[in-house]
Length: 421
Picture 1 (spheres, rainbow, N blue to C red):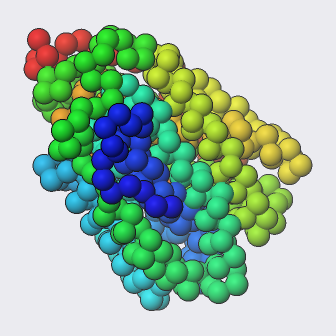
Picture 2 (cartoon, one colour):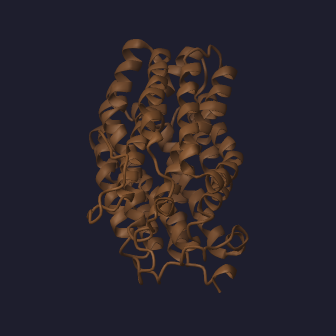
């Protein structure tokens, strides 16, 4: 897909920010297909190859989130200081090199170190913090939709790329598949990232919706330059309520997502079917759900959209707990909204706290909410190793999802920040 390198001609009806979003979306599809959905495919082969327990394999993912707790604020500061483009390029290069080195890691400590220090740092900084900051830089109006488009391409990658990764893992081995993933990040990802533009002001433009009254359901967005400071955000109740609700969401979400294939195997579905057909189906459903949730979040209070997504998650967990193998398909449309809340959450942060310190504030939020992704997968693995069942883990997640829905519903937009008074 060739994207323009120059600004559209005068009178063009297409806002240039959408070309930036297109590049970001392609990058997100690569990371989504090879990394986010891909880890569940690697889970059982790595477990068998290295002779690990499921708790130990889960620890690889969970400790990478501990890294994120420290990396998030640093990456956010660098993005606000240097611009998203530099961090996206660095993240893409680190991820590609990480997968190449991972393919040659022959024991648990080496796999753990490579996955945490190269792969996870690269994906988190470049494909998560960097790309969401781009959307927040370019959009005020349609911010949630722009972020949802980027996030939806995680599912596009899951639908188109993950089945190919699955074929590579089962036919070539997980090591060769990891090496191929690294080549894709370097050969495809880096050229696309090179064409990213940091923010509209660099090109003599303004964000879409700048100065317009009444974007979405809230009052007029703060003017560029009047955004909240980091200190203001930390003092606000909304910052901490958002973190609390997100920790509850991410505990269960990451537990299910990382153990997705093992959970389906536990439910009686063959591993190859779970790793290809069901993951691809979840990704396919997720595309439309992401866009729908973004559309809703630009028209209704984002807090209520977040709560609605968590109610859907409660239903999804109930299906996993009580449905038989033939009814597991019902899980997919109800679980997809839980993942689709990522862009809605970041659009909420942008709406609450503005543009200029968005990446730093985002990094601080990920530092605190990483508790959920750290504990969730390990808890799921420990429960299965102890009971040979995921029942208790799913029951705990059910309670967490319900509490998260209530907490999101009570979330209130902060009043005027010190810098906005």
